[in-house]
Length: 190
Image 1 (cartoon, rainbow, N blue to C red):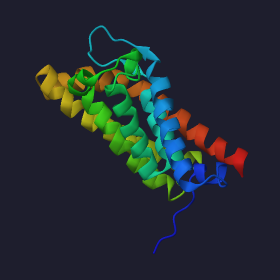
Image 2: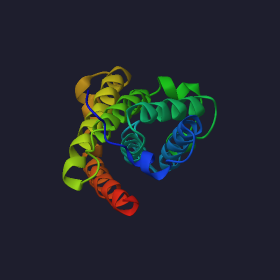
Image 3: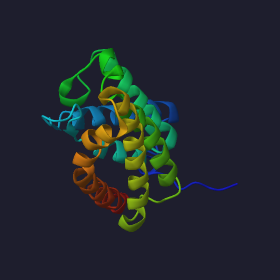
């Protein structure tokens, strides 16, 4: 049996009961994504805005691990669907779950889980090893987002044009920022 490396949350909160710690961290993770969703740059040619959400998803997955990271994304989506202003630019409501960005939201869940799996193996502890999980997570988000967007905009080529190409540079910067942030946080705790 493989022993998993503790994620950052294990080190930061060792004294809190597991149940309370898990619920608290899942909610805090969901709220971090909601906070970063308010960093929004609408693109006049695309139904998908540039947001800070993907950066937060990368961090939450790496900080909380697979199950708590995915749970945080489910909590984020549930709170936004229930009416809290959690989605891009403060949007809310169930209609977002059928709109142009719905695929990206589903991708957040899977990406956080996969990034969390890598973090549970210690890959978020150095810049060099953290880039791979963040790249994989970003590709997952794009795969779900662009696939869903294909049905909305009427074609795969159009979905790539509107839902992938305008975001590549920004997402590379988000991956680099996450790759710097997580190892720095580890150094402060260790």
